[in-house]
Length: 249
Image (cartoon, rainbow, N blue to C red):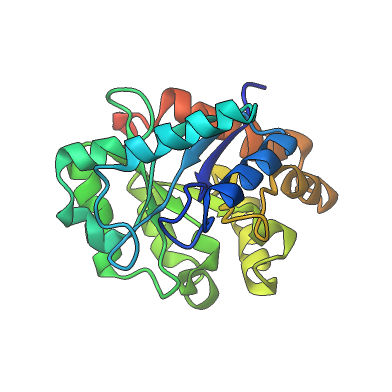
């Protein structure tokens, strides 16, 4: 099945609305390990009201990795970011590269779906990422008004352009409310979701990949599909990326 990986996870202390301090980060990492996770991509909010300078994220991740190693928490951390679409034109090629995942020629960026409808600004940012050589993984589209009000039309447009979609485990378990849960299951039923991730923010918003997989199977999703969404799919995206051929019109 490969290593269990979390692609959307707020684990760095004191940088956004995730863990407030190192103790919370370590506790959250222990919970991820207990949930069966081996790799975590640290994805702080890179947007105008949170992290605006990504240049020190590598050092922050390395510092936290040393602390986890000292505490015997068996997690491997990777540098990433949950990128707000308004930040795309503000980041240099090197800065985008520093928060991207995947191998050469198949690098991708986690792009945050807005809670408002997906608008032309979002589409322009996604197009710019593709033009600059990156694939797009759309974060939690089920929580956007695009799903609630427009039957995920904006997401559909991005998927046709080669983007992939990531749904939150909390949406599947119902922790984000019934609207997000219903939207998540609808997108999964239509085969529009590539991966599930916890989008964990701290001990009070913990890793839930294992619970999400159980909920999916209990709700009638085939076990192989549930495993692909929560285990093999995330690992494959890290290892193989989003091939450039999928993002060229």
